[in-house]
Image (cartoon, rainbow, N blue to C red; front, side, top):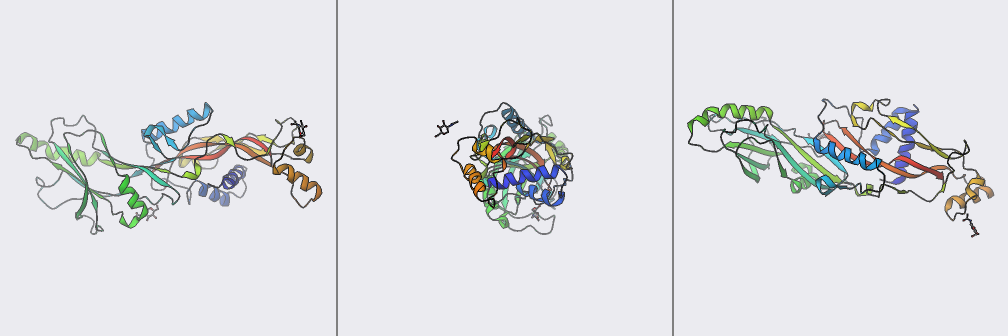
Length: 365
Ligand SMILES: *[C@@H]1O[C@H](CO)[C@@H](O)[C@H](O)[C@H]1NC(C)=O
Ligand SMILES: *[C@@H]1O[C@H](CO)[C@@H](O)[C@H](O)[C@H]1NC(C)=O
């Protein structure tokens, strides 16, 4: 992110909160967040525990101060600053074979990766298949899970697409909660060429068994599995433009005195409450944040009262000579990031770290 754009967005947000020309500036701010419109989630989604944990760890690190690497996710041991929990948009498939001969579950899995921007690098793509609570049917039939790429466009709703390259073939002795698979290579191909994303074919088959009692339970087990089954893709990506240490001096500027004189440049407290903006409908956490802003005069006397070789001093000097050169202005000199957990238009839960959202210090520059 270009720093000046972030600062601009912060100013914009300040103006937003002051209730001026809301529509346009909201758009600018949303753009900064990588959104083209205000998300209006259809259904409230539970926040996956891994996203919750990373969010709260980040909050704890922010309050304890110090510098932290915003682009390394310790919990996942991977680099990244954007986490998306994508929901499967595929459909269940039903074959015309006799029920005994057909798989327990056949499903087309589809994940829409269109939200990933060109500046992002995918660093992790983990498929999660929720096979139901592991208390079900410990004595049920042994299942086999087969996952393949779909290589031809799927037409006609219910028919079974021809499976392409097989990605996974694994035995599942009994329903066992969520099983994970690494799909990074596949996701990279889809991301580079969305037309290649025709989805995945998941088949859960029943392994042959000689115990007749087991077949009796089979329909029931499969029906339960179809009912509770859920698939998701945890996509982690890195926007390298947002990987600066979290605590640093933005640019050379003369630190403003600590509000000793009311009108001089200093930091003003400002809490942005997302509810005031109507954004609580899609931002899950935080409820708001202490954004603060810089405001006040930067008179020549202040700009020159400190020894400085930076351009603010030169600018102040130039202004004294030529009033057409604008005076130094009150700007943020130190900013810090926040993390936001929100839900997008496709009901995906997203965790992102945003740099330069909180003004820590102001100065004349
Ligand atoms: C993927 O999502 C985008 C944005 O929500 C949408 O415009 C596009 O049609 C979707 N693609 C498919 C194949 O569903
Ligand atoms: C400012 O610079 C002058 C000349 O280099 C030096 O003598 C003086 O000690 C400096 N003052 C401060 C506050 O650094």
